[in-house]
Amino acid sequence: MITREEAYKKAIEQKKHAQKDKQRQYNMLLNSAYASNPRLKEIDREHAAVGANLVNAALSGGKALDGLKKHSAALTLEKKLILEKAEVKEPTPDCPICGDTGYVSGKICDCVKRKASDIMLTELSAEMPLESSRFDNFSLSYYKDEDGKEGNPRRRMTAILKVCKEYVIGFDPKKSKNLLFMGSAGLGKTHLTLAIVSGLIEKGFLPVYGSAENLFCKIEKEKFAGENRGTYESMTNCDLLVIDDLGAEMATSFTKSALYNLVNTRLLSGRPTIINTNLSMKEIETRYTARISSRLIGSYDAYKFIGGDIRQQKAVERMNKE
Ligand SMILES: [Zn+2]
Image (tube, rainbow, N blue to C red; front, top):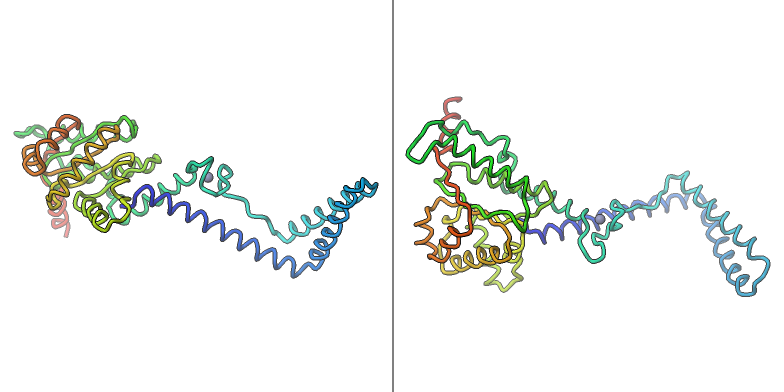
């Protein structure tokens, strides 16, 4: 998915573009007003002459000064009225705080952050089924309300859903907990993490979401191409990092050390991370080394998703309908 920095860059570009459009439109209107009102050119000429006389009068302390000032004001007013009548208005910035520059005293303006959120949501929706992965369409009815050997799926998932909703409500990029969602495929881990991600984007936070496969592939490419490490940087600095489907990527010494560095750096800077995985803790240890699994055990709240594969249940429902 698009990183925070890319979204900011895009947002600022869009603002600049909108500004240019406005200026172009204004110039067009102005030109046609001049074309249909010859008086405007005369006013400009008179104004230039009055201006020159004003300077001379001011230097010589002459009496003509007051009269010239009045003349100048009258010309300004006349021009203003003509342009108003022709409905030519000077473009005003959409954001009065930054004047559409995107920055306020060296910092990125809130209007850019809002635009960046929209951009991220749009881009993410293009890649991910965001619209179908919300809290309000997460159906608990797919989880059986009966005790199994791992517990009661309905009760477990009701509790996990509550944890996820509260996570969004109380989100703090410096304080929120790290979550580890475990359990087999098709139990709603991606659905719930996407619901968290879009909930946070709507609140103005900038999370980074991606499958382990995509994220690691991107940072590996960046590393070997010697490019700037934008993806890695935003994975370490973003408000929330979500690594989906850890274990589905190729386990190489690169991905292992990248995972360790990411988890560790974010822990040290107190930034939250959510990891989804089909692997058990034992499998994580075997696949990624004990130092990673001990970090996860020690610093993540683990939740085990249980129940029957929802994708299969939905497929059966569809078949029954047809
Ligand atoms: Zn602004």
